[in-house]
Structures are given as structure tokens and as C-alpha cells.
Image (cartoon, rainbow, N blue to C red; front, top):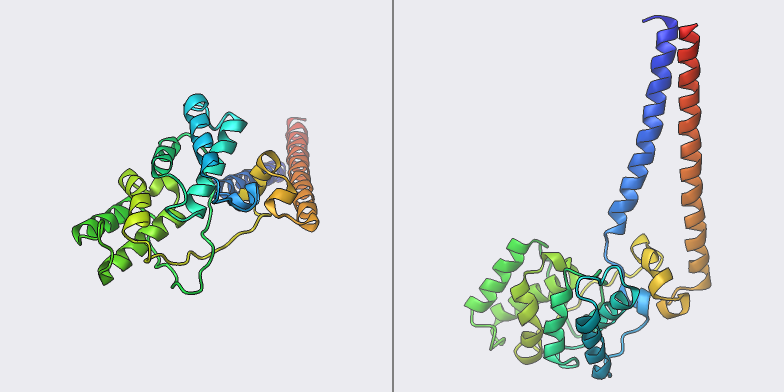
Length: 266
């Protein structure tokens, strides 16, 4: 390889590496963005004393949001509020028909994650693998052991806590429909004393939350401090700066490549 050919190859290689770096950065951002945001960061603390609000949100979703939840801010806001109540309140706080009907919008709306208040008298929930097959097996074992209507056996407590963990910790897309439509009844009628504590990991400054908080919640509602909001703004500026600088590097490398090829042509 001649000196001029080597310079050309080197310029192209550096350009490819710079372009690849930008692609990797974008892919990393996309992966992080798929994590579920926290309902509390978007909406503030959950209100479990107003089942009229739950009914109102469900009625609005049914009347206005079929097929358009993700593209309509009001629809998405209503679903977030309903989901926060469904998971943040005890099983008997929200009408069962509302809880079951809510799940008909699971594939149409974005989801947020809500935790129950920590109870020091309860043990931590067991770990569960978040796959439809594993959760289906856990549900089948729970039913086969006769636990759906009577949760007093030791095996029933362990089985329910695994299902409890799946409902709160797994992506809703991984939770089978049969569990979604039976869980709330079982919790309210059979396994009222068999709950467990879900590990709480709430960071309102995470990318999963900040991509929603501007649209669905203010810094006061979400519990974000002024310092946290400043951090979000600074982070966004830094991210934009990285993209601009990276683009400039790519353009500079391309210019260098064109210059090398021009020298070769001469």
C-alpha cells in the first residue's frame, strides 16, 4: 500500500469509527428509554381515597382513547393515573371492575411503575424471572395447589408472593393476561395477608422518568428538587453538546478524507 493510499485508508477508518461512536450513543439512549418511568415522579403521591377518580379515568379511556392512547396526552395521563391507583393502593381500594377493565389498555398505552408503601412487618418478595413462561408456571402452580380461593397454606403464601412480585416488577408485556385479570380479585379476597415488600428504586432524574416528566408532571408534583431539575437541564445540554461535537468530528474526518482523495487524484 502506497503512502497516499495509506493516508486515504486511515482517514476512512477514523471517519467510520467516529460515525460508529455516534450510532452506539444513540442506541444506548434508546435502550435506557425503554425502562418504565415511576408514576410517583410523573404524578406525585397516589391518592387511594377517591374511587370516583378511578371510575372517571376509566370512562374517559373507554370513550376517547381506543387506538390512540400513546398519541394523545390526555389519554396517556388518564392511564398513568389509573395505573398508579391500581398498583399503589390495596386491592380493596379500587373497584374490581375498574382494575380488570384497565388491563384492556395495556397494549395501547405507555406504562409507569408504582410501589406499595413499605411495611416493616412484611418480608421481602422473592425474586422471579420476568418471562411469560415462568410467570405462567407460577400461576398454574398457585391454582393447582388450591390457593385461588384459600391462601392459608405455606405453599400458597410463597406462590402468591411470586405472583405479587411479577405484577409489580415485570414489564406488563411479560405478564400473562390470565394473571392480570385474576390478581386483583385474589389479592382482595384470598391473599390479603400474604403480601410482601417490593424493592423500591425510585430516581426521578433517570432518563426513563425525564423523558416523560416535562409532559406529564411538574418538578413540584414529581418531587424533583430544584437541584434535580437543574441536573436534568445540564444533562440535556451536555448530551446535545456531545452530539454536536461528534457530528463536527465526523464532518471534519470526511473533509480530511475528501482532501486525501483529491491529493491522490492529482
